[in-house]
Image 1 (cartoon, helix red, strand yellow):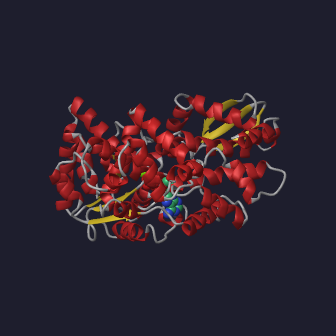
Image 2 (cartoon, protein in one colour; image 1 turned 90 degrees about the vertical axis):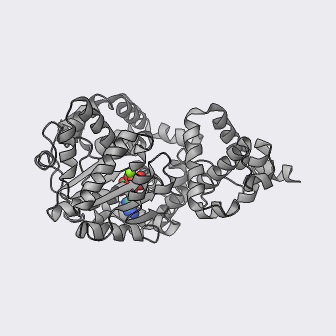
Image 3 (cartoon, helix red, strand yellow; image 1 turned 180 degrees about the horizontal axis):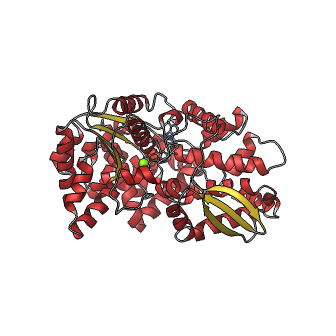
Length: 475
Ligand code: ADP
Ligand code: MG
């Protein structure tokens, strides 16, 4: 989009170096879009601007582990993004500064996971600052509650306050960026405040740790570690799908903890019954307690989230501007945050006050062109593309091509038209929420590897963005 590049151009004359801190924040906003959620959270979010001098940005980081990542693995992408932002070559220097106590206007100071505490709760062999530490900001106080997440939130509070006694396990699922990890960390913080031994681990980290333990003959220590936790938080547990030995270990850990009345909380991108290739005995454990989902936030809720986040950053943005951001970023809270960071950064650099139209320009390259078609028109386009009839598309035939077309239709209805899964299920002859969700995931997976499918989806998106192509053909 030309608008956006001209915006960069305007900033490219060094003007933004009048306010290097804003430039750093703007770069963080960009980076949030470029790296995975975990990388951002662990290494970039805690990095604070300290000073700028002679082309060098001095950035404070909380510990040596983060510093190491920024200096080695992330150096290039950070430098490139920052240079793009300020329009000149810059250098980066990182320095370790443990986080200070937070400002008085923030929420109650969250217990930061300091190295001493981390070491205490994990074997000495592991780095104190490894990615399983809890993020300080992910506390209940900063979590906005609304109709889309009320049950998950209430259940999370209950298990944090009285681990092991209410919902065990608590299983939370949702699409990406909707607050599962935030809630798990919030439980962890609160349970720790109450003196409980908490372990937070992702399905992936659990798997890797187990593999290492097996290789080094340290399986007993591995077991002992997990079995002494009073609250075990397993994030992105869908990762164990298709990994029998991890499942086996998790199964036994689960049983040991559950029998001892310890709390288990699991988060996943889909409900237990939609996790394919998980042994049924483990799946049934997942279903023992309470299953709570988080739905994408409504427009109203997105505005509320933006208001809270803007306030926390001390940024006074007009409501019209926040509403515009909320309208442009339809589903994902993480992207909402990235968009806000970016808008705040640009607002600080701009001469004129920010307007809703200004927001459009700032976010232009972030926001995909809006689909112009109705759900019914979309079905027509997909059916035509795959050379099947609309009746077959919404029917129950299992021909390979029909099944794929059906999955792609569900995917586009979800991703581009933002239809709720339940509604999508209904459109396809009363299939359920989980089926629709499974289809969407399936297509997401295929898109990683299947060039032909990617092309089909691109083509369909082009057609969706041009209402004429539907209208003309519909005649
Ligand atoms: P998930 O684990 O579901 O992919 P995360 O917990 O990582 O999502 O959330 C993505 C980002 O959005 C985080 O920075 C988180 O703090 C924020 N977020 C999500 N939901 C909320 C909410 N209800 N209130 C405040 N922040 C939220
Ligand atoms: Mg997560």
